[in-house]
Image (cartoon, rainbow over all chains, first blue to last red; front, side, top):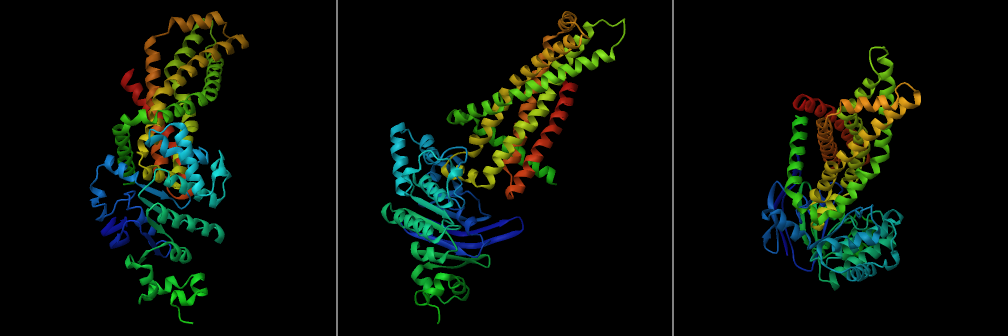
Length: 254
Length: 245
């Protein structure tokens, strides 16, 4: 379980947000939503201490991660998978080697076991035939899927997705959404998704955290979000194409 | 204020690198790969710079010393000492500031802006020991080897130029080189190259590691890394001359 308590972050004199408190139960999926530049990715990068807050705490399974030594923090980070917005694949090595990368350093697996695990993960993201392709030969969707395979290769307890469907066509977006649902349901992974794609959020998330006006403006389940009496949240969620085409689902007046 | 801020962050990065250098054995492959990129791949340009420096120095020195009272062997002595004490280290240092420094800053800068360094950290790696330590240590190890290559090729270039132009016979050149040769000069030159290796790789790592602002930011980091490396190569050259000679 991840518990965020009174988190505050600023860059220099610019306050990003403050008083952010929320809880993500095990096995559930949280979507962090909000306008571009409101600090969604910044908030998510606090969950494995890639960024440090000005104030506040993040507890993972009861431990405040900002109190951990760097060595303990690195051990904790191995329990997190992270799919970055641009996939952040290492471009000096092949797609296969990107997925094998954490296994080579953090496990004692033999080469044939590494191969099996890598192929299983690539299979899971429907890229088993990718072979030794360089990362520059991959499309945007393929890069994200390789990034996802790399993120799950160490069998993490937590998976974080930074804009997993941005820049992808609707069909590929749906494939990625299916994968996220698959990870969450079949592997019982707790997921955090940063997105402003409401179509995706409604499909994959159990909870939503709405960042607005430099604070956590609203937090609750997706079902609660759909009926929430919160003007700015409603304005945000109903601005998407999906909401327009599904007024009943989004509680939008005709 | 920005200068102090930069210096503080640079020192902190070095401190982190020193603290995490014990992990090098885990990243041994990176170290070997960096030694190849820094040393082996730089060999052609260092040899070229050495040969041409030695050749030009021989021709110009013999041009300046046109006198029946100065023996030809003096040219060999001047060229050899100049190359061993100063030019092999400095010329290769400046060339490598461009070649190695720019490569390191661009690599790390691109990794930073494309979140690859964040990815490394988020997997549980120590990005400093993974990326910075192998590069700086490779500089420590390979720069003296490159210095030896530059010095050897510089003296050879000088010898060849003297022979080909007929200005300094080979026997005279070698006699002058041998007469005034001091082993300390080689140690001094190698000390310089170790310092230059550290200065170039650490500055470039710092600039790349903290790059920000997309492609423009990487470009800026690379330019700054190269310019600063050159400046600090020259500054440390002066300091070492004052301290050690």
